[in-house]
Image 1 (cartoon, rainbow, N blue to C red):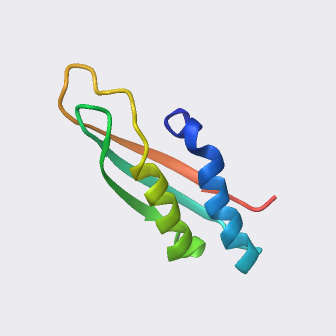
Image 2 (cartoon, one colour):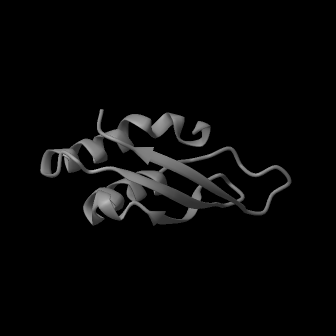
Length: 89
């Protein structure tokens, strides 16, 4: 997803740690991100991804929380939902 391009390696690193514990771990999940008027992340929630495990999801959420996005056009906040798939190759 274009919104997550700059953090792809970090998110992948969270997943690789999980694969070391469970080589069959995979996830189809959605990140629900609330972006503030200055482009900082105000809130991150996830749905799905239970097979990934709490530690890996927490790792990914922390990375998304540190992100800065282009401020929403016209001010205010912007909510984006980003589907994400992680599968072992």
